[in-house]
Image: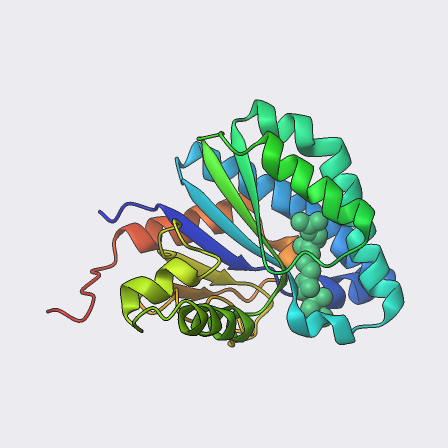
Amino acid sequence: MNPVNHVAIIMDGNGRWGIKRKNSRNAGHKAGLSVVELVINESIKQKIKYLTLYAFSTENWSRPQKEIKYLFSLLESFLNKQSDELHKKNIKLKVIGRKNFSLKLNTLLSNVEKKTSSNKTLQVNLALNYGSKTELLNAFRKLNKKKYKITEKNLIKCLQTKNIPDPDILIRTGNTKRLSNFLLWQIAYTEIFFEKKLWPDFNKNDYIKIIKIFKNIKRTFGNV
Ligand code: FPP
């Protein structure tokens, strides 16, 4: 049985869910946040060590200002309300992506990262203003600047995910089969699960089912 160490998720479908149910994309984001909490708790139960959540991509800046503002206010209130709880649950929070938000949000994110930095039960990587192409370009720039040899090992050291093992499982909800500039280097041998349900409808049983299927897959990593 394959161990599950790292799960990465593209939480797609909030907007469609919100429009369908409440005629508001933002209502979908709000509902999506409850699923984030559910998946964090179930990951702990399943003894998963890393959970990477794609919360805002470098491309998401092209969305309407109102939606962007709402997403960050949701994140801010989540951190304000949940940071003690995250810490109590021994969860480490790490941001991947460039923190170029308001001073208030940047400080809040850095404070929670600092406060939870020694926690060991589960590391939650929040991909915020994250794009895989930017991450790779910056890694190559760093190698070039430091005059390091371009090797796989050196490149990995320059990625934002250094010290984080590659995902075993990638889940994308929302009935769309694309990777949307997410962890392109890191998912070279990841098992990918495309889920028809929209993110706010994704539940504990769906998550457990995927983990169960994954555990029984024969992973060959190019071997036979
Ligand atoms: C993609 O769905 C989802 C996002 C861009 C945001 C994800 C945010 C959350 C799950 C809630 C907030 C999370 C935290 C950690 C505070 P979409 O809006 O592209 O959906 P669509 O494809 O239906 O338009």
